[in-house]
Length: 382
Image (cartoon, rainbow, N blue to C red; front, side):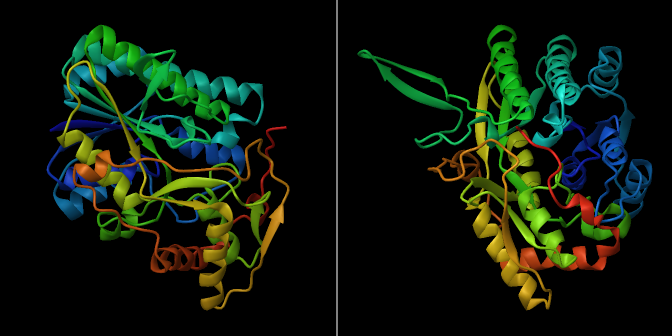
């Protein structure tokens, strides 16, 4: 299959591109390399040293014998995107190419406007490119479980049957996003729903949980192929922050009560879920939603697990609660459905002690790269 991986230089996109290439697909990466520029702006970095995209794809060809084509440019520039579609004639478009940090979107007005413009307009351009140049192309869009928020009822997969005043209908599941970033994903979902309805586009929204992990089988093949690991208070997810705090002997800092519960999945499952979606495309005109996660944990549970492994590794750290910089429910009901990907063959990799230990040992090996002042939050929703 001819597959574009937009955002293929990022944490999820890079291992996905390698995995799909190894499976025999004709893969093209489209990326504007802005994720690397965020590091410069925030004076941050990846714990693991990462090669340039040019070096990465050259090494992949050397070790695998397979070529990944690259286009460097922005989805917000339609002339560029149109040329990519003309040259590649994609059968599937995997869309990771959005600003994906909730804290980054909450820095100030400028960052909120940038996040929504970049994400919503870029996605709208992709929809038009599919309509105009590849109407059979299947859009595989990375959404987020954060679109749903934390309702006091079970979270279904995209849709919910409602009975109201004696009548029933199946409607999009209500959205309660928690940041301007999450709001941009909701706007994407609405635009895709409408495009499928009026143009007959095929689309699958992968409402992804928080991704953890470091290696996939492909990124282990050579040090040049290693994936990035974010740890700072802007792009580092809770698990990564806790692990890297432990690696440098810093307190493991839990926001508020620690009762916040979120869905998680291993990076190895991310790449497999994309493959499953590609091999089982949505029908023409269908906007299909899969909840892409395998487990859920509270923030406090994650902190305690990291603390336990850190102690076993001889690291001195303590779990401490700090003021929550976010506006969110800290203690809430959480029960989400995730059956569709399992029904299509997903065999989950779960969060074991060995997985945490693997990431922790990598962080310890590279602890001189961890900028200590970046492991605490610097952005507030207030």
